[in-house]
Picture 1: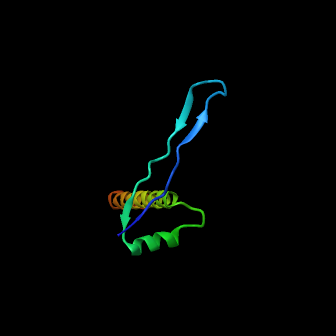
Picture 2: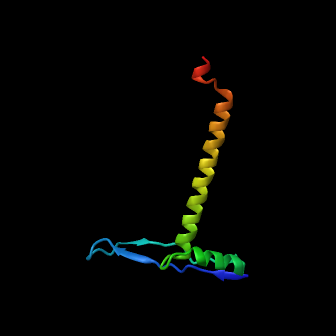
Picture 3: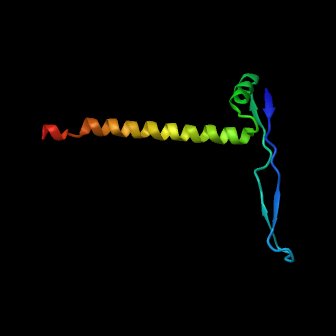
Length: 90
């Protein structure tokens, strides 16, 4: 199996130049996701130049959620169509 990572960094934003208080915006930690070589190649082919694997996986997850939601709406529409009487029949 191949492990791929998408390294992220910790960014520091200073609240005020003279303030000892600083806000830290943490990025997700470096994680490893085991994938087969075939899957890694497929992901690499989907990735746009400059796009991170993290961005690609977020995009794929978002698309999956949209597809699932669309399928659920279609199922509800089909169920409603079976249960409702057409206005033309009234």
